[in-house]
Image 1: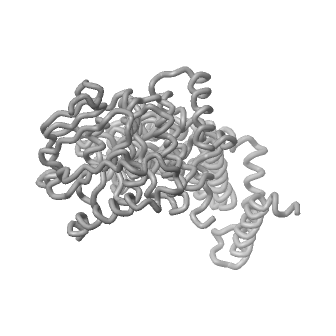
Image 2: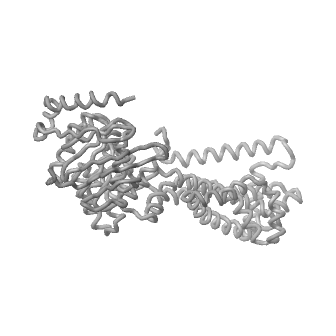
Image 3: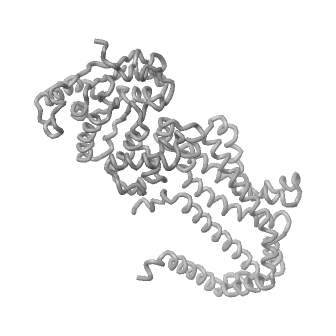
Length: 254
Length: 256
């Protein structure tokens, strides 16, 4: 039971915003090298939990550890991908991707070389000197992803990263994410409110319910993980799980 | 076509012709004998230039102007950033600038003269009182409105507080800071002339006062014109500086 290696552990975490209890006694563990989704309706605290893991928000009570070390703030072992991309509009794609390294004091030629590699990995070769306003939404998020990858953190935290792009781009991103998880040995924590997306990309789905936020269920899709990207969406087990989740969540949608 | 490439320059030229043409016409219609035509004013301008009076006058006026504008810009942006970053500082300091902006200058000047005399100090003060409030208030507003996720991104990627301020907040705020600078610097120019009209007549203000007192209205308007010309040139330089520093942010207009 306990020989699974957990990269991130969350134990009995509480978080209040004034009078509102965002998280109450929440505990959850994230296996190393896998993608865990935090799925739930709006207001269930999933983004709050993600930011606490990232060290951007402090928990009021409880403990979060990453690789066994307690979280006291942002760290080099975690990287964040933002829902609204959070790019610097006045900087080129190259500078944006290298920004994480720039803040860590890496020398210019070195960080640009690293950035160029990841710009190629996300499929943006040729756009190194473009500015964010010249790119489409999907391309901007790929810049954000390249930035998070280039700091080589072991834990990648993604806050609804595909919700601000169009549906077709979103599907492509989900397929690309499957490949990314397979090829990189990182731990991914993925926040989404799309049931299909969660079941499609995840090794395990943690369903969070709101007010107060708690983990209601953890689902591990087994059968279709090995299938290729196109067949997953028609797999019977995939469709079953999606329906099951919707049935239990729909009562919580206002 | 050649026209399209130089469109912006041609439009500026055209609007100048319209304004000066209207001035000329207005001068000929007998609105008042004190209102000279454009051509008369330009003739007086030429005379002032050639005789060297204009240069001597500007040597005098530029002193409080440049000193005041520099102080206003540097201090204004610095204080504005401090206000935007600290609630306590905002509480203490903002009211000073709100009052500075709204209080009638004509009432403050006698007070200034009483304390600081009629020399350079008072004139620099007048320029600052005119220029600083809008620079400070624009800067503080822009700093406060920095997108939250950009700041979080800086923190998430291990930026220090200083990094976040210099690499994220300051560039993000710069379009509005520069807008504040444009307004502030224009107001500073007005302040420099006002100081010369109200405190002691020196420099360009003296040309205006003296010309009016001997009913040489073309010279008076020539002096006013020269100040406006200088302000326009200076604002253009400011625009070029902004374009040079922040090439990427120039996104054009919202409808493009």
